[in-house]
Length: 393
Ligand SMILES: *[C@@H]1O[C@H](CO)[C@@H](O)[C@H](O)[C@H]1NC(C)=O
Ligand SMILES: *[C@@H]1O[C@H](CO)[C@@H](O)[C@H](O)[C@H]1NC(C)=O
Ligand SMILES: *[C@@H]1O[C@H](CO)[C@@H](O)[C@H](O)[C@H]1NC(C)=O
Ligand SMILES: *[C@@H]1O[C@H](CO)[C@@H](O)[C@H](O)[C@H]1NC(C)=O
Ligand SMILES: *[C@@H]1O[C@H](CO)[C@@H](O)[C@H](O)[C@H]1NC(C)=O
Ligand SMILES: *[C@@H]1O[C@H](CO)[C@@H](O)[C@H](O)[C@H]1NC(C)=O
Ligand SMILES: *[C@@H]1O[C@H](CO)[C@@H](O)[C@H](O)[C@H]1NC(C)=O
Ligand SMILES: *[C@@H]1O[C@H](CO)[C@@H](O)[C@H](O)[C@H]1NC(C)=O
Ligand SMILES: *[C@@H]1O[C@H](CO)[C@@H](O)[C@H](O)[C@H]1NC(C)=O
Image 1 (cartoon, rainbow, N blue to C red):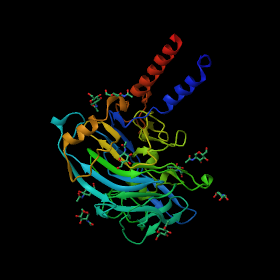
Image 2 (cartoon, rainbow, N blue to C red):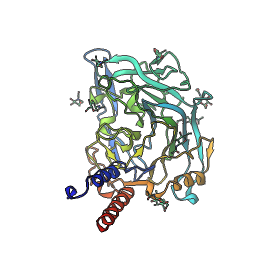
Image 3 (cartoon, rainbow, N blue to C red):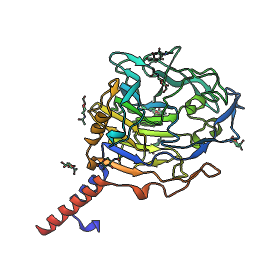
Image 4 (cartoon, rainbow, N blue to C red):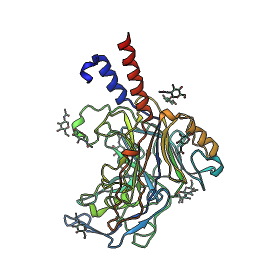
């Protein structure tokens, strides 16, 4: 059928589909009842016999935004420059409903230009290498690449290259490692801090994701694939990149949310949002990814972040109206979000999950049936209109 269309129209059609981009990616019905397995024991970390044991009893979670309602660490991959970061909580916030919403309070803050750092600890995987755990967490060097001996403030103009990663935790130290302790079991000799907790929370960023300038793409694992994402904070404290899946709670579904992530399989200038939880899927690796994406601006500054509200709505957004004030009123955030038009919003509903199964894996239809691709349909309709016009002429 496409063969009968003039070739420029076919090109136009594919361009429209490829650039189906949004500034707001919205997930509804976020949070379910489930469980996962924490790490119970790490043995011989620096030895070839290195091994880990998961707990024999499951850790259960439930409620709004679960399991992302737990403490989360914030992760960054280059090429990326971070100029501002803010973490906010609210006692209650419902998107679109100012009456049920209280203001947001800033609980952590980083500003590169004034070198302000409040309740923020920069860490990276640049410590001791282990066959089963990978590199240990260490403090991050102020230039954003490699290890430092003590906590440093990330410097201004802190561009990191492809493959380079670091993370932000709070400045609240963990109690000692232990199954019944606040941070669970974690790797020996790491700087161990809590991530950022709360059911209703928001992470804001001012950042750049310029195109990678180094030429030799084959020497990178993630060439020109920047990302900002959230992990259950137990994951990096045991192992973010284990060779043995028993060395992390990730594989059993303790939780990851990707806020802005370039995917290998698609355009390098599209930023995707993805839940890696078992809510309505068995496929944790691919997760529940909205098929709409946010454009990556490779030459400008981007401002935006993610809101997890009090009734299971999660919104990743980019807006130059984003501010990093100590307090953000409910009405200001609602109008910022409302000012991103409906036809610039991609909405996805997560599947309802009744109860955790014995494996902790919840099955359902997944998300694809619920997606609302406003922008795409608008594009297709306008192409159809254009075709009709052409045929009539
Ligand atoms: C917010 O309101 C807009 C416009 O009325 C609507 O399209 C959208 O679905 C609402 N979002 C949420 C999360 O309720
Ligand atoms: C953590 O950060 C807060 C906010 O900046 C500060 O008041 C507090 O002293 C810091 N605590 C530690 C242990 O550094
Ligand atoms: C960043 O700092 C680390 C630690 O001081 C150093 O090893 C590394 O070479 C520096 N990287 C750059 C690109 O300057
Ligand atoms: C720092 O972040 C932690 C983790 O979310 C939070 O418990 C604590 O209240 C924050 N500290 C300040 C001073 O806001
Ligand atoms: C590119 O990187 C690969 C893998 O690190 C290396 O084998 C190759 O020699 C490099 N090529 C150039 C031109 O630097
Ligand atoms: C991305 O794709 C390239 C080419 O197919 C491959 O060599 C590379 O390993 C992939 N990287 C990741 C992170 O999947
Ligand atoms: C993980 O632990 C389970 C239960 O002890 C064991 O059966 C499995 O072989 C372990 N997996 C790996 C990769 O070591
Ligand atoms: C947002 O503002 C920055 C400059 O602060 C600019 O580089 C960027 O292009 C702007 N983005 C949009 C979508 O207007
Ligand atoms: C989105 O809606 C706004 C206002 O309703 C309109 O001005 C704009 O042209 C629309 N954009 C697209 C791509 O249809």
